[in-house]
Length: 485
Ligand SMILES: [Zn+2]
Image: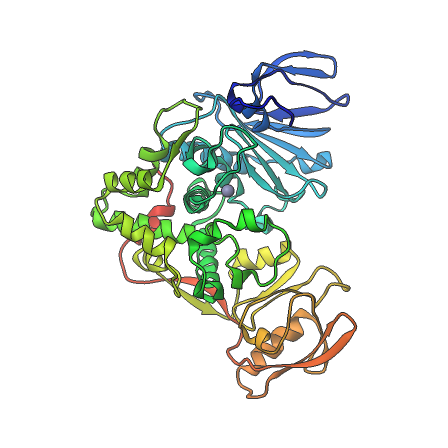
């Protein structure tokens, strides 16, 4: 974007227009001024709003009102490759409407004059989630609504991006706010910006019904298990991972678990769960992180202008909800090297992490959707299952796991297991058999034009993470995931 130097982006006026192919519809946070044939002119706005307000357009679209009669309009704008994919049944629509209501109950405010989920159901448009102040760019598989149960795992996407309107866009870390696009951003508080958004995204997914409570628990189990095997925590504090977007903005990376890639999302989530359960316990159930959300993100209802914050503001707002050594709490978890992940929130929430030999339904569906076999918590591999050519290709090798110790690396391909041609079930059978056999699992592995035998000395069977209820009475985590009345 070319703009005059020396001005705040928010003070540079812009009058934009767009010309679309005949018959196309569009969605955007921009306000329409006039339409003339194929051309739409938008109301005068400022450069910051323009850059933050993408237009999605397409031939096959559907628009759903997510808050009929609400204070301001909220819409779900669907864009599909083919018209028959634009099928939203009444239950699905209701869950998305409840998302809006549950978010309003949580934050007690709104910071947009209208909000549009720009949601592509496409094999052509990238499956992403990108937050904006008054809209979000969301992408998923063409069959997401048609095969609802099979595509459950990513269903916290819209709750996550919607949360960003409050956490990230309206309330913004001071070093992430810049006067214009020539000033580099700093990311030191991404464990609030993304970490707490990851938390509320999953909590709101459960509260709105987009996930069942069980699905939310299963996702929490996966995060806890992954953080436990993640070796990077031996050397890298969480705070340092907030530099990942600057060091390596989502380009291919070797050994992401040894590097703790962008851990401020998922481990941030566990830290906020810990804070939530702590507030609930200390206040005797009178207060919770919901009160922090309302007090911190819910100020200046209806206001759109960003209000920045520092870590001192976060600590002050937590103390206003529940007096505690929040500075020490955060410093220990964010700045220090912690060899164990923060799982106290799960324990206080009434659950503990266990492993069984069968994956949760949402994890199994996730494997099918992403055409992979996740054996990360047993022999330490995620294996490609896309088609015959890719079958057996190693997508991820857990650093210092059993397969790693047998010198398997990403990009290698398993051709045979104990002398039998590789198939996912052949490998799973071998892992089961090795539980009662002292012999290592023998693999033939191809890397480039080299073939070799690898012996994986692993005997603990298949292992998949789950949460198991601990104690009696109402569990705090169940209360957290329940819809607000
Ligand atoms: Zn995010």
